Length: 201
Image (cartoon, rainbow, N blue to C red; front, side, top):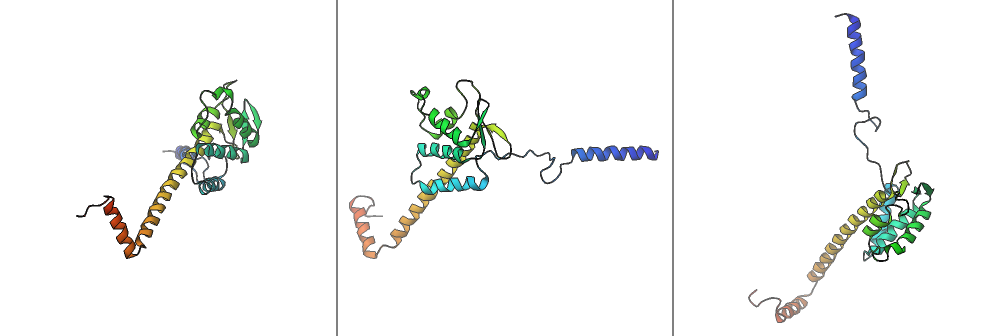
């Protein structure tokens, strides 16, 4: 085989190899990188959730809506309504007004889910979806970002509820173990008297 044929073959093989082989450090890889679709960077996002959990003993739906609105208000993202750009403060003010609009009079916005699905979706006048441009230039539907925010908050709430129940049970068990013998005896008599245990137990 002529040398020039071998040389040409090596060039073609090398070109194909470079084109098909993923590069490192997130550049030109075959794996699609999922963008961070939240109102704040990861550290602030986690801090906001933690502050919400610590602040509330009960997790009411209106508090979830306030959480989302506050997240918009403090976000550095650009919010787009009917192709017009605005700040997070303006967008939050608009959606706060919209959620009490007469269009929802017969079916009011009562939950975080209502807010994301029916308020933060699109303009009723034009039908255009509300959009958001995040800090790294990623553009997406505002509803998608708020859905992510609400899902993470709900997950944290469920985790907090379980942890609080477990803590209460441990404290009750600990308190029970610290009872004096005569207190335990009185407790047992009371339980027997009220039929909670039988004499043969």
